[in-house]
Image 1 (spheres, rainbow, N blue to C red):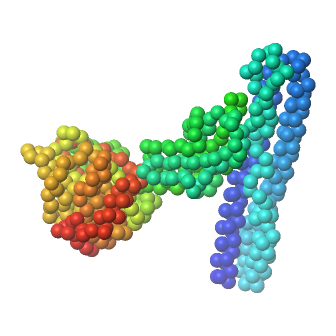
Image 2: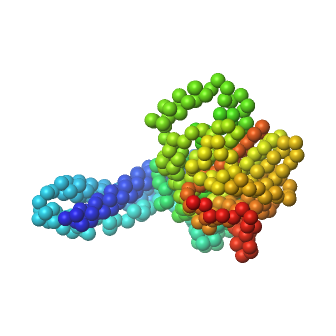
Image 3: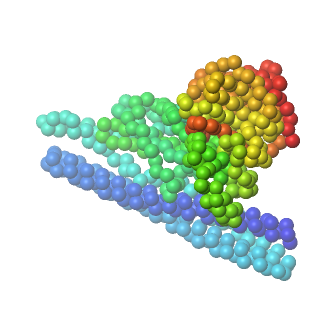
Length: 497
């Protein structure tokens, strides 16, 4: 009986997912139906306006084209209404089956339960929800012809008609996602020398399927693209996916959209965890600044907030790639003493990740690195066996060093304006780069045995973070090259428990 319950639970889950797909498709059909009606009305209105200026010569054309549009509207409306009716019936039947399946879970008698489970299985096999097509049979665009009125009135007998451009075809194989840029490539299904330009639309989403009518974000538009390739650069990948679609335009009208493609755009996104920061640090999302007056007169107030937060405030987050959980660190104490430290709010448990840090030009001292969640409140980055960092000291004289387990290795190179941090959790590598030139500054090689939190120390200055970044291609190549050589951090390499 337990096995049958598990099977029934899977059936219920499958039905629920299918119902969601059908509901989304119904929304799409309704949206398309409204588009057919609205677009057909707009087209007829445009034709009326044009034909009013052409009088007798175009009267016959007007009537003919209007009839064609109305016939196409009627045809498309009928097709969509038929699909809408089929989907509604399928959804109603599926919901009844889902309700019957849910009630069956409460049946105590094994024989009755088995009978009900077999009935549900047979009905699911024959359910229309799994046989209907979830793609509209028609679109909401009218395949009418638009008139080119650029000729003078005395040349009306030689009117030319521009056909609506066909939908471009995006080539997913040629599309590229790298270095926080997306390159999209498309082609026309057949040659069309009347095309003037293309329009590209894109939007970020966390849904991996086709774009939905009720998606949470609006399409962003890039207009007047002359070629059949375009690169969106300088993006922040703060969502899992991106939808893209293209359409062609001639001098008169825009054509159908291409079938949309969904490309994966994952990257590590995190902010600074204000609940972990030293009282002398002023933290705001991705920026931290030294504040020498921050701890005065505020300790009791902040302690009260912390005590309140321990009962009702979510603790920092947890991720394996960048998924988060409220239980990664529990309720830890703030850093105190001379540990002017703040941690990131998202932990790393696996995968390869990259982020960048820029220091204020007058910053006297700062550290950038990672640490285990159990880093003590008095501990400083690089001075324990559970933290790794690169440290810059501009006080009195400039020093630049890699630190771990209270050991330091001086780095004989210029301190860059921006430091890139590359973390390969599974490969046991933590590398630091000049973010501008991608010059390797230092690499720690170890075996990470606990989730890592990005860590930052700052004194007399400020640090700005850039997250939502992919691992740069140049860094990937340097890592491959470096892995073929001996470790660059042999003196500080270790395995921590």
